[in-house]
Length: 451
Image (cartoon, rainbow, N blue to C red):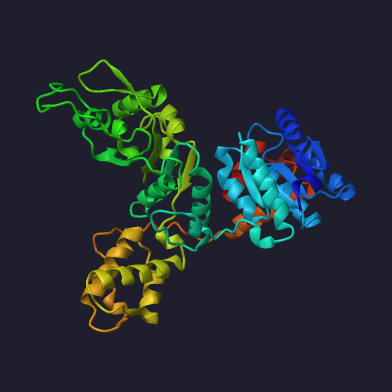
């Protein structure tokens, strides 16, 4: 269907958004209807036939979680399954926006958007009504160039989709995850799918820099600034000018180092050690840490203003033990890599080997799997790898056993919340009142149970 023949419904409680979309679409489409109150959605869909609905992720509350948007998305898809729904969201809600795709949304657009981008998404949504293959697929690894990110599991598909969305922007990204999960690969993928891909990608392990080296390495120095400074030297920020700088293990830097880094990020300027002359920098910042976000929020350890500065969008990389059959996908990949490296025939994994791989906890994550497969390929005497051929390193400590099933009480509580939300058509205030808890407590439970 062509844009000029389309009927569009826009639902957002921000009148500025409604006005902007109305002005943009009125000359482009057959009909544009705007609505502030999402509770009118059912009535509007009953009375009209809309080709596309633009739906905000958040309504009614300063404590925005997107749950209202997901609730109304499900209502729209239940009532009019053929209607394409495009979610309107902000950077902080990208995880929820990805979840909306699994609930049936066609795509999402991030505020503030470029008008051309919004028109393109709407046109693609209209085209999908006649050709469903044009709907963005969740299996999108082929759309990510650069380092090979292997994974067919749901958590990895979430990450790939998030990379596709955030890479073309200049948003600062914080990549979280245990050691060995592949945070650097994620950072490289973001850079190589960004508008800065032809510019430098500079990695710095800031957690390994001493107090004395921190400023010199990151910001550079002038000749004579300290004993061994025999010549002027540009720092890593200058080297990354125009491109991307990746600060690994940022959770391990001191409060003094954090203050220096924050000043540079705020002013977009560095001053070389031993100089008073500021130098403008243009870099895209990516950071990674194995420190949980809750610990970074502890101001005794990490400045909260710096957390906000580096964390426009966060990407949580799952541990390997939570990636299911990705373990075998990665194992077969490493078998091929190391068979070629050591000029040996490519062995197969026996059932006993795959069972052993799938039931191990991987405290060292992908890195541990990689080294285990490399050793197995080197030591293999025949064309099949058996369970006894795969040995895991005793250097790794066991993974924490915190993967317990929900208790019967949790299952009951989750079911009760779902039932009460359905009864009150997603109205969180009424639902909280009936449940006998505060609205804030209800928000916490929605997050806990992924409702």
